[in-house]
Structure formats: structure tokens, C-alpha cells
Length: 81
Image 1: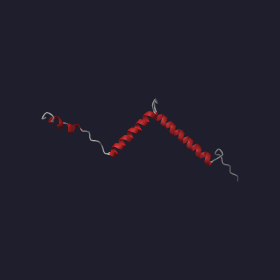
Image 2 (image 1 turned 180 degrees about the vertical axis):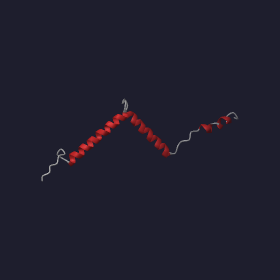
Image 3 (image 1 turned 30 degrees about the horizontal axis):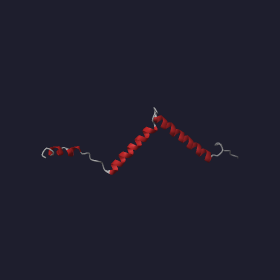
Image 4 (image 1 turned 135 degrees about the vertical axis):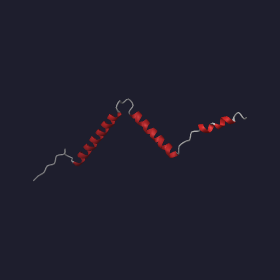
């Protein structure tokens, strides 16, 4: 019986303290975001270039939508004087 007591003394040092729920939630969210980025760019050599190209295309589409709504006729305005 006395042989087991020294083993239990070192067990307290091996215990891993779990972080509070808010910290744990943040870590899980970061890990999920990282996994999504990795799967989104799987097989792409330069993901930054792909992201820039996508943003540029979205801006061009947004600009085309705003000019077609406001101008309506190709962007030319006639002034009669």
C-alpha cells in the first residue's frame, strides 16, 4: 500500500488546466477559420493573388451595377443649351 503513494505525488504536475470557456471558444473559432482557408485554397500556389483577383472582380461588378442603375444609358449625358 505504501508503494502507491509516491506515484500519486507526481500526478498533480501532469494535470493540464483547461482554459475558461470564452478562451476555448475563441481558440476553436480560430482553428475553424484556419481549416476553412486551407480547404478553400487547396492546390493554389499563390492564394493571395487569387484573393486580390477576386476582390478586384467584385469591385468591378459593383461599379458596373452602380453605373447601370444611375446612368442607365452608357454613361453619356446630353446637355441642350
